[in-house]
Length: 262
Image 1 (cartoon, rainbow, N blue to C red):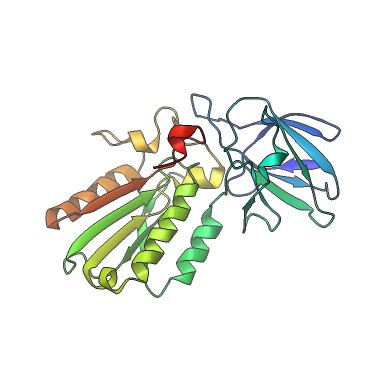
Image 2: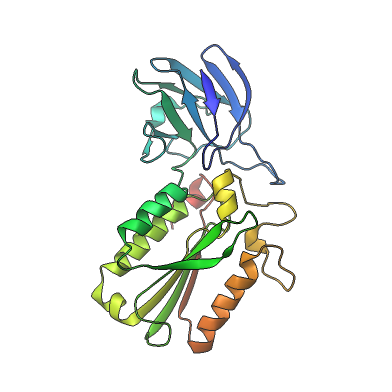
């Protein structure tokens, strides 16, 4: 059995493996406080029943972990009954599952982003916001009438905190709703920046409370990330004509009553 993270979004620190028991925690990297994101693959363990023991607190949602058996393309929540009161969870890996992915949520990385963009290439005008520190193009999506011709103007952004993957699914839903609504198509110019911290998404970083500061806290007169001044210029351009909605999408914390409902 091997625990692997050598893919987009991968993140874990394995403390030890003792037979069918895996002891693990999130890899915080440059995040300066405890945080919850982890995502790994269990390989060459088909047919085994394994118990996973978190060695730190608060790294599971109320839904139990999510799992994927197709390389992270599709996800489903495990049965919450597989989780004990101390957040240990036990899974039986199918006989044909040589790559069994587990995560605290449903990871959304560039592969999912590319599928969405390709599926809607006839309505999305795709360009580049700027280059990331690692030289990756940060996507900029636009749809609807032009900025000048629109009656209303909206900006959506996500993944300032790169681990907050569930916000990306919400963004997909909002954009698909706008694409299928004739009124939106006629009147609303939509701009979307789906992966602000695209490097962190690929690396599987936490992103939240990143040292010396994270992308969401970078909006001042001395930004340290190349995306920040471009984002500020984008907002100013919209405001000069008339910006109606700016929605930067985040995830609430992973569980407890204040984070389970709006």
